[in-house]
Image 1 (cartoon, rainbow, N blue to C red):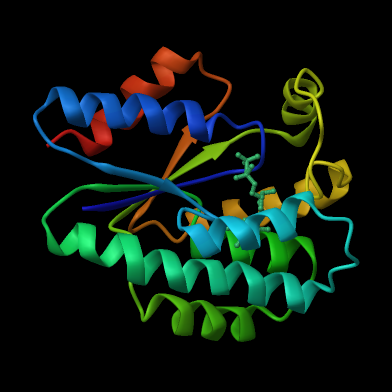
Image 2 (cartoon, helix red, strand yellow):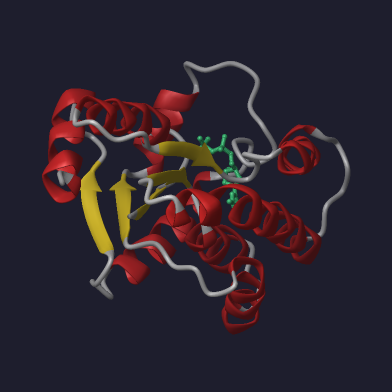
Length: 198
Ligand code: TYD
């Protein structure tokens, strides 16, 4: 089973992901917990360029780099894990590109979908958990962290567009499940586990 977590920064994806990994382990499986951009040696080098550098990165370059890291992660880690019958938990995946580079930066969404299709070889999640949170609430949480990255320095208006992009995708149903990210971590974990429990 391939599970992805999506949402704006500060929505609690990383905390939920480690909680879910623990629950899967407690139920006897060995999940692969990973993240984007990164999760492989070259992917983490690309992540550093994307999040930690001062380069002027054009939106299309950003989209291509995200997908370069994604192609490596799918090939090197996700597909082998799925082939071995493991549960894969991934913090962000192709939907992040649609939300951030599409709705956030304004790139053409059909073109981005083709790019993601090339990077993933068509591998789609079975379940996507969308942690929905208002940008103002996220900003309040993030201000408690130090050292904002390139994305965390974006405006509330940017995150409002990203969130609306997610809401639009989640309305399509299917693999999408929307969770209330204002829940306390334990309640959020319980809600997510209800969806995923084997
Ligand atoms: P990360 O620290 O993993 O996110 P979070 O703060 O939510 O834990 O940083 C990843 C950043 O990259 C995040 O701001 C979203 C952005 N991103 C994109 O813009 N497009 C993408 O395709 C992906 C995977 C991430």
